[in-house]
Length: 459
Image 1 (cartoon, rainbow, N blue to C red):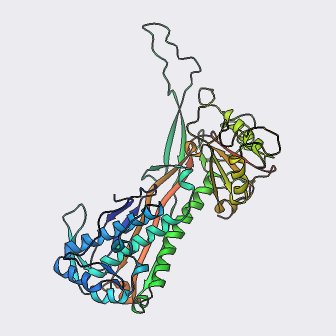
Image 2 (image 1 turned 45 degrees about the vertical axis):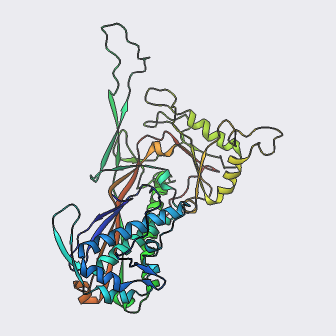
């Protein structure tokens, strides 16, 4: 792995390659000294990328050229992440090596397309022959898609914990402690209390999704850098938004807990494989560890700190498999739609209780329950602009990756697609991911301003 991008290249004359995006948050760091092509020749100048210099490098040392291209792409991603994190960087060579800064894409194509290079596939002894131009373009596309993917302001990563599993249907087992005793050892020869005498089984399905875009040769011939950049940016941005929307639908159980429950359900188990509503207003089986009124709080619009207190008390009444109250780790999360973001911010940042003389706000700075993590997103408004959520979602929800996000590119004039339709480049972003609950409602509460659950929004 190289900061989230796996260079798993499958190259031929057409320049096919596949890379993966790491869904986890990426570390940001400054990179090393400025990169040159040797003998002081710069990759980038005020007039853009030096096409002739790249051609000379590809002809003189093909393997070094291939490694140079990989290094440029890695450095650009490092620089982008560093800048996003507020780290000052100074590396114009790598920073400008992208579609958006490529002044003359046609010149690059004309200089590199007829230069063949042999490269060794990473991790193998297999050498393949490809054109110098697709090798360059494939990396530029991966870097552009990854940058657009990362720039989407998403909160979903902070609501789930990640697992990888290649199986279509994954089983997550929770251990149930049948004994309600105090675990006292009765004698020196007696056995200690054994736990794990029962199991709860929660199932998480999979959902394969993706999108692709075609770059016609016309855009390269016309040097339409903007047109190419826009297409690449859309792939990364739309892909990331689709994943964010899926996470929000699941952690709010928008379909399974709708007025008329329907697939997909975020909760499958623990007593049967069939899906069931995650948010309920009672503690009927199998939601027996919930308080009497369940984990859906009605008539609790987010108005002031008293509404947060109602949600906090409901969480505090939840039980573990021993019938004891739970010591939840870390700080709770308050998830709100954009419509409630300002109000939530004021509640969590007011020292005193609004409207009450000299009464400290327990959720404000310095309060007893200070530190609540506030997450808000406009994407939640599409599901409900009034429902809000409180608790410990990462304890409850697992994001299962059957296949992490993968970028696959195919380009070059020697391909069948070019012969048939004059298609220059094709790129695909795909993944196989689903979110499921690994506990029956414990640790996460839904709060509604009235008694009607949010309607199922779309598919």
